[in-house]
Image (tube, rainbow, N blue to C red; front, side):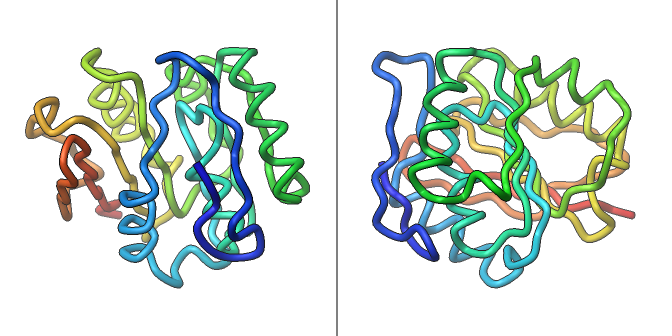
Length: 183
């Protein structure tokens, strides 16, 4: 796992052995950031189920103003903090140890341009997270985008009021969904 582009390009990121995290492959990360393009520059990014921080760190490396990482496992948070230090991006990052669902039920301090959701597979947590964001649309900026990483077999159409599916891309065993704010 490495940073693909930007100020921390080429830096290796530490990962956690075992299956407690599901890192994004370099191929999918390249595709994701090709789609997001220059809109990431200056953006506020919320990385939910952050794991070791690969996506939020890539966003910071490519010029995002700030990334907030939400993760509840203290072992994973230690690795995430090490990755932020070794890439030199810790000054624009905030790591929050919290359950994602409890975090999203709290009052938002700010709105985010991009929200990235990559929960453990086959638990329906991606759907639950989207439903919470839909119920509290103030988490997302007016032109904001929610990106969801799941296995293609997990996908199901959702009936949402404030956000809608705008695009779907499949990369082997990874499905990336793009939802946009309707406000």
